[in-house]
Image (tube, rainbow, N blue to C red; front, side, top):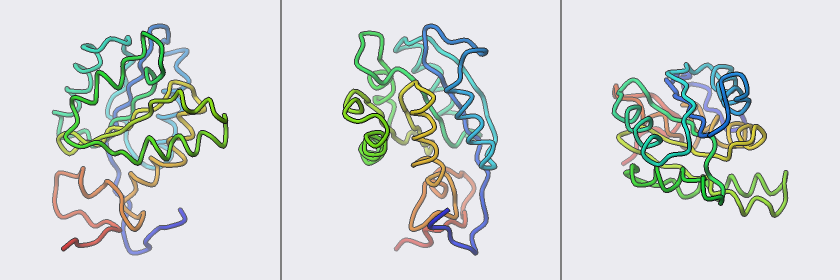
Length: 184
């Protein structure tokens, strides 16, 4: 990690993974597999993994359950962020947010441009915070999941990353020692 603070301990988070798809199964969900591998390799714990049809109300139900669960600190959502009629993840989940994380989508598209060129404009990757749970939503391709995890999310869910990360905000037990330090 390029910007790690040496005297801050790693904090393992409980992270839920949601794959939004009308066709994927546990055997064919390579995007969900990539996210689970990334989070567990980093030292986090998988709270739960669900594959859900691209339906606004089913998506809200699954994510709302995790937002209300104090044991889940982060949610990773893959799929449903494109422009087809069935892509409804932004419409389903943004109403649940207390705050949007505007920079996530911007940075994701910047990183994605290096890999897929102008096709990245068709990504509606987005993120937000709800009830002290951070939610990152990304396209459904395995490559997009790896780009999001390795290029953004991994560091933002690591308490050692500086100057700031989301760990302090999502941990319910205070104080949590993070690279951000006291704010005042």
